[in-house]
Image (cartoon, rainbow, N blue to C red; front, side, top):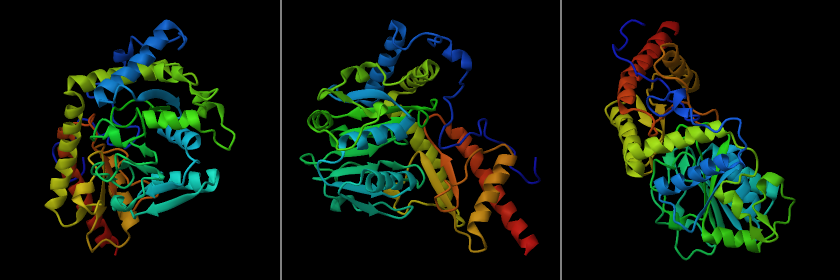
Length: 384
């Protein structure tokens, strides 16, 4: 252990923002009931896939008339499927305040080439939602995984909107209160708040979104893995566990185990409370120190899952190099893995605070961040 280092350390140093930490006390034996070597179209496979859908509905409080499907290619696949299938009949408004939202802007404007306006805000900020025209189709991220900024609520989205809202909620689902009546398409992946395995996305459609699917045929060719309708009607089997392509039944079992754990810790309210406690510990830490701050400008928009931090000390000469050195030092000590800022984001740290992370581990990490900061400042002075 390095000199003057804190005495205690996190029991679990995994603070990656995706794939995220597994549920507490995870063990591979928890997956012993997985339908391995069985067809996902066999009764046992269909039962487990349907269970994943309906238990998601129950835990998140998704309305009964909304459709939930398991789709290929994680959250990215779910968002792309929604955009390619639904956008086109009216103008689109693309909102972006972080890397992934900017990616959706590029896909719509440069690939689909439909009539679209983009409204952007810098890292740490969010666009003025009250100025958005929701009579257009609006695409946005609920929680900026790479910027630590989230939509505070759905108040700005009108109930009588003419357009559809397409929401990438991958780092918000299970940690933030999503207003289902304001969301027509919602996507997320298992490997975020629930600590599941990669490659599977969730696509949730409101009745308004289904109506659009059944009344609109896009002008462009539709890849097989994007096709949600046949003969002008929704392929209902997709939303009953009959997946478009072959799913991993091991990953399905892992997700079912995570959902069961979520119910055990108090359901959605319990999961949200865990994330709030984790993020709150970091916010309090930053408030009492003048060399580190939350990247989110407005406290009301701070993410409680992907908490992004910036170093503010005037002595730091090269912000990017300094932040990387701090992250590397933390990893070398084995107290925090994968906490560097996203490659396109401002230099700093990004600490995942979703529900599978224990607050005691966050609290144990914070003195180490201070230790690493001071060590890098001292190293900088030595080399000056």
